[in-house]
Amino acid sequence: MPNINPFLWFDTQAEDAARFYVSIFPNSRITTISHYGEAGPRPAGLVMTVAFELDGKPFIALNGGPHWKINEAISFVIDCADQAEVDRYWEALTADGGKAHACGWLTDKFGVTWQVVPSGFIELVTSPDPVTAARAMAAMQQMIKLDIGALRRAVEG
Image (cartoon, rainbow, N blue to C red; front, side, top):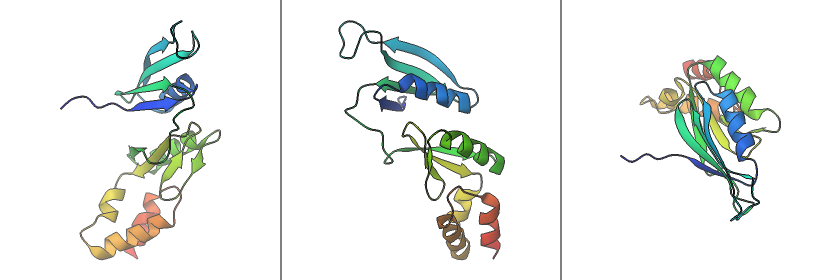
């Protein structure tokens, strides 16, 4: 299978966004920063692209201009080992202007949407037992940030 890598379009915030993300995720780094030259189409010297890795996975951010906006139609899922990890990523990604949404979704200060999901969540809401799945789904729909303990308590009745 060919490599499929996320490519994020920003107006002028590509480097700031990449630095923000690599500061949050372990095993992350900026690998390359390129700049526009005299040929444009943006001002010479402006950062054009930032290649970076989040936990070893490649991403590219582009300062492409104001023509296109990132929106909630695309999101990144963070599979968290436990509630402490959910809390840490939630706090970091909602800092400085990020916005919490329902059901474990948030939008960070750059407009990128994330789903912060605790281990065990998917198994609860997709349980073959319809009572378990319904209770988990009902509890999740009442949450902003997902709480795996509260979800498990809801399933237990």
